[in-house]
Image (cartoon, rainbow, N blue to C red; front, side, top):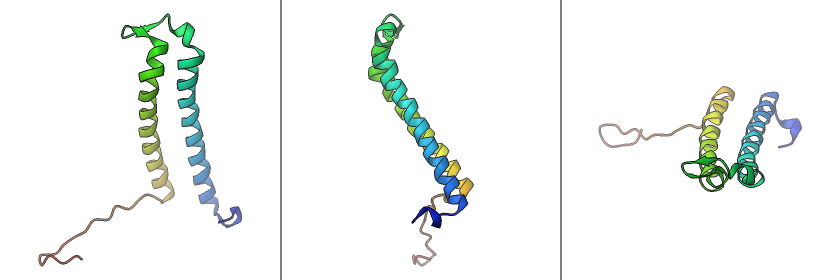
Length: 102
């Protein structure tokens, strides 16, 4: 589908979707790269649970932040989908008293 075929509502939806993805990727890269690698030396003097903070960010912190970002993305996209009327539909099977699907 070309850009001309997209409605204004679709363009707004995708703009917000891409903005959310870029924001979350920047946060993840900042925590993973900046806190764990670039600031490793200064953060090695700060201790968190008896380990240097740089070590914690490199091993546990990046994973915890990533999991938090995944949940954040899922929640925010669910809201965005509902706002623009493109939410997923969960189909369930209903059976009548005879066992036939209806």
